[in-house]
Amino acid sequence: MQNSSEDDNSLDPQDWESFRASAHNALDVAIDYVRTVRERPVWRPVPENIRESLNEPLPLEQRSIEDVCADFRDLILPYATGNIHPRFFGWVHGAGLASGIIAEMFAAAMNSNCGGRNHGAIYVEDAVIRWCEDLFSFPPDASGLLVSGTSMANLIGIAVARNSRERGDIRALGLKHYGRPLVAYASEQAHDSVLKAMEVLGLGSESLRKIPVGFRFSIDLAMLRKAVAADRSAGIEPFCIIGCAGTVNTGAIDPLNELASFCADEKLWFHVDGAFGALAIASESLRSRLAGIERADSLAFDFHKWPQIQYDAGCILVRQGDLQRAAFSMRPAYLHHVDRGLGSGEDWPCDYGPELSRGFRALKIWFAFREHGLRKIAAVIERNCQQARYLADRVASIPELELLAPVDLNIVCFGFRVPGFSEPELDALNEEIVADLQESGAAAPSTTRVSGRLAIRVNITNHRTRFSDLDVLVDTVLAAGRTRSNRSRS
Ligand SMILES: Cc1ncc(COP(=O)(O)O)c(C=O)c1O
Image (cartoon, rainbow, N blue to C red; front, side):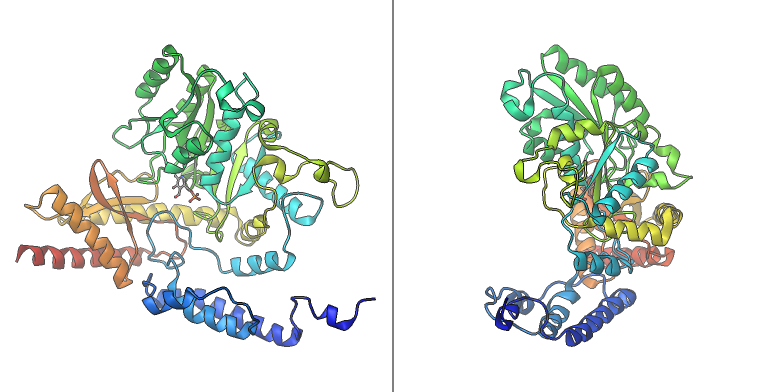
């Protein structure tokens, strides 16, 4: 029998009631933080003294949980990315859900390892994957996996595409035994995670052919056909086409049906990067824009973007589930299949991706869809697209502003212009305007380049954004632009 001093070695609270009080206080802090977000600046830089405090050496001794919470409140909480704020418009960030606090807390309490085995969390992930398969009209023998984000989902999709070529066992022999070089194709607007996937998979970034885009920033099909034909006649083997369902720069959607047909004709894998745009399928009014997505061999998308679910949460779906399993399943003796007990269950998530130990990502997704339902999430998506059109109309109506790309979904690229300024001067000015806005805490757009020009890029994937927030954005851009351009004139 163990003695009491050994029992004391547990890391559990010594006094559960005092832990309960601290945890309730912490929950109040978290709820107040989300509830009052509109009253704070979108973003503020981390001061030097705070950075120094965070740079402390590895603690060796115990501290009370109250102390740790107090440090968190003072040193970390005020300096968030800002994406829960209604005027965060940078990159493609979701805003998160208040109830995500509860889901994350429960997931932490269970501390499930979702690599596999037979327990409730696995069935929750199965349910979430089934919802996704239904949403995208994938067949019953499709498979899927929750991952950290679309970067990982793209990597897995392209890995399955690579491994599913008919010739050679790439898993056993590696690429050098494959024979001919393998190449993939995507529009030049495709996200760099596709490029990274090509590098990580040993295919090389030069093996991603970047196909030019047309006026609306979607892939030029004629150029794609030419590039595939040229590679084939040079003895190079095309294996995959990556279609974009919402490009990161402008939100452009490639012609997915045409890409699917071309892939079928050419016997190529059709992977779709739908990081944020894929979820527009939830909206009746936007769905037709994604026609053909249901024909993808693999589809990558995120829950942490438009569905507003807390980071991190992405998904990969593969039409032919056995191919995903064949690319990743590996069961050493200590994980071998058994019929009974905790180690049972046929399909383990670790059979469908590179990770063995995995957290309970599915719970926050399950919570969000059960609480809000797909219709409410679709309404957010539709409203964000209306807001993007509203902003584009405002930009078009103000002579000092110019729209730099067509608005397909939820992204608006525009610039402040000044007669007589050269393009490099305008680029520098717009870069400064964005930094001014971020540093003032008024709004946080980001920048990108479209057709060679630096653009103020406004992405709206935020359930808290109101139309009036876009008015604030326009007013602050105009004020910053006028101040800076007057200054450089005088
Ligand atoms: C089109 C597109 N693909 C891929 C990604 C990468 O997604 P994640 O950041 O979830 O890995 C993004 C991120 O914004 C994206 O917009």
